Figure 1 (cartoon, rainbow, N blue to C red):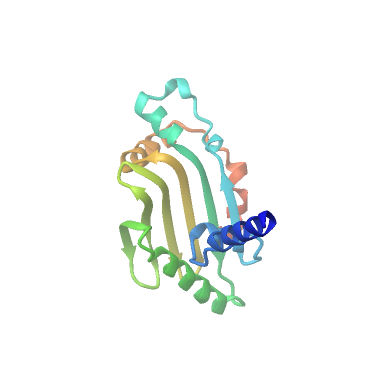
Figure 2 (figure 1 turned 60 degrees about the horizontal axis):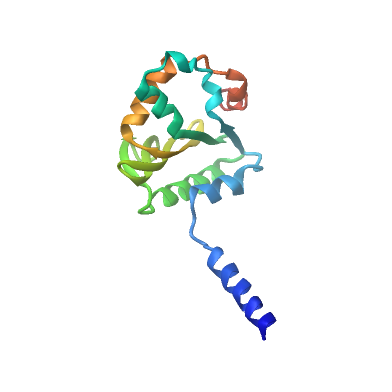
Length: 177
């Protein structure tokens, strides 16, 4: 009887954990090894900032930033159909209510958006999405803890004091060619 209860418990947990709803995290994992995508994980260390020169607000903003994930689809003459399918998948994921759009720019087939997950004062994730029909598209997830829109603006000022480690960004050069 005890063994049956354990089996039922594990089966129940398995069913609960098998959430079939799309998410950016799942999308990133599914496409990391796809030859049409360039995937990159960037740590805060890429900034190479002298923390002694930062203000209190800049230090707090930097601490709220945990990592950045980049997934870019490089469009070629041979993968145009897949480009349309993948772009539609990302558009669908970003229409989910959990992704709250801050701004959108451009037109339907080209442009981008900035969205976030969480509440105004406790943002878990910022999502930058840009697509251009001649080049492809890119999705950037900035993950953190208790971020807010002010932190993002403050991080821009931190970038001015940074000595970015371009070696971590080398895979993105393929997209620019």
